[in-house]
Length: 378
Image 1 (cartoon, rainbow, N blue to C red):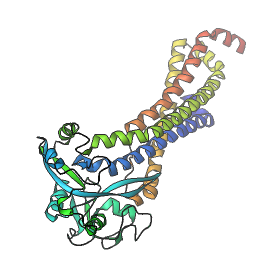
Image 2: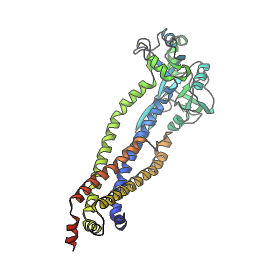
Image 3: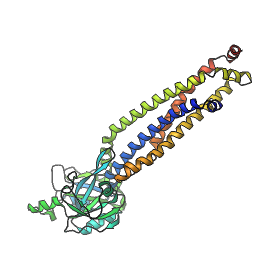
Image 4: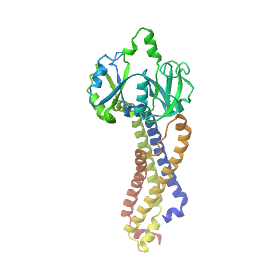
């Protein structure tokens, strides 16, 4: 490392180029993975506790014997009749959704709350005869709401949920949902003469022994004419399909940045070492053989690559703190400061740089006659 210590400008050029490449890749992968995680928290997390059971496609209500057939499955513990809406959740790069679940049965709503392992943070449970809801704290932060505020499209025209509801409680837990009792859609149907008490719009199925995977596998056999099942696996598959194009774009960007930077840095380092022929000749004259010189070059390349990688990766963490504070935290979402994919992608940079630089340098040195270099110097 004596050469780079004495030639700090050349060392800094290599380190800064490596730092920039590692930083870009770490930043891109972490931001994208954080966005994926935010979308999955809203769409997937609730389905780790229950599975949605909806009417067959084209029907408004569940067939009368559908819930009975669902309950007959050995893996199903209990089925709660509900009504569901989706509300928009703002992410860094667009919108996703989270469910708003209504149950006109106060006892059922309390059981749903408990079975989702939710904990009331502020306020109280909704009353059955009022348009009231309780909401997950991350959703409230995302929407900039607090207990006592009004919620719905009559208050905010961009909101997906119809009507006006009063937020009477805020809770924490793994399931990012909102829970309510009285629903505008059901109320409008009741005004039209529909027997709401004996009609089921949707339902939540809870598994025995909390084995959601076994229940979902069992419910996969349900006839589409009986009910439409929305489970964790089906939503995850749909979400992965939607995000596949983003993953492809991210992979292309990473490949272009990594390969381009590796070639540039490798060429730069090769030129530096090509100018050190006299140094290698002197080392050979004082007792170094080619093997010793190659070992020295090998060690220098590893150290300079590791330093560049470490500075880039550490700096990206500092930037993540700023991005989390300015972008993710105000939306009630968490940034992933570490992902294995991000770490692995950044390792590609120093590895490719080392290959692009070490192979041509060592190959060139093997072909050179160091004795001739000394004689020319003399």
